[in-house]
Image 1 (cartoon, rainbow, N blue to C red):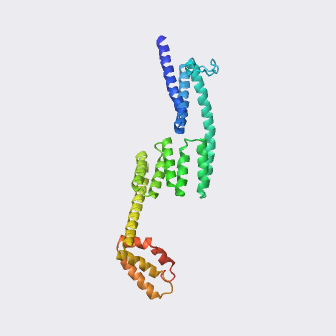
Image 2: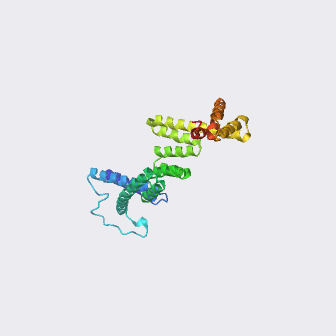
Image 3: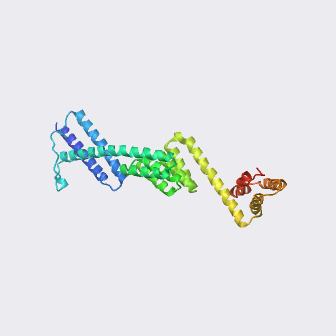
Length: 297
């Protein structure tokens, strides 16, 4: 009998210690830590209640025998049973408020999604932001808002939202996807690769998609390098670069004979012998020159 009482006492004291730590986390300035502490407290109380039901006794926490305690001036004056009863009441109130906040946040998320589909990204951001005001650890609101920021070209804010989503869930693949996309747009190619590779590490089933994303990064980086080389050729006055640009300007002149344009196209075709010339043709508006010209097209 004494052994049973000692075991019950030790289990009770352990519960008190764990819940005390959770209360400290609920009072944290970090909203993510607060929400996680609330969830952990709910789980802890559910486990305690189940253990009590299995043991067939309610001596540890008997709601019928405990009246709501008056808050003492010194927290040390509160007896353990009253302390746990107070914690349970607070946790249930928090859980109720969280459920209500979840409903509101979900509704705002749907409104934001509707605005996003319509292309009204500013309105979508407002809805997602309002939703986060209701529930600060709802990761989908961060990732959805990051996607809207990317559409508006605000990549820094998109990256910040992805960081917050990862604080809520360190294995959030959608956050890494949008983060990789933002870095790609900012020409941070290595960081973009790291984000996409992280997706494959978290979920190996997505390796095929990851390879596609990495291929996109390689193609963008290659095109960017080619454009840089082409611009350097123009700036340095390289003969072929200047000829390509001058030839395109000549071909864009109106009211010339068909033979004039045919000769120009023939020379231009012969010049497209390497990547630099082809990139110059593209960056100097070669496709528009040809497609918009009534005679050449």
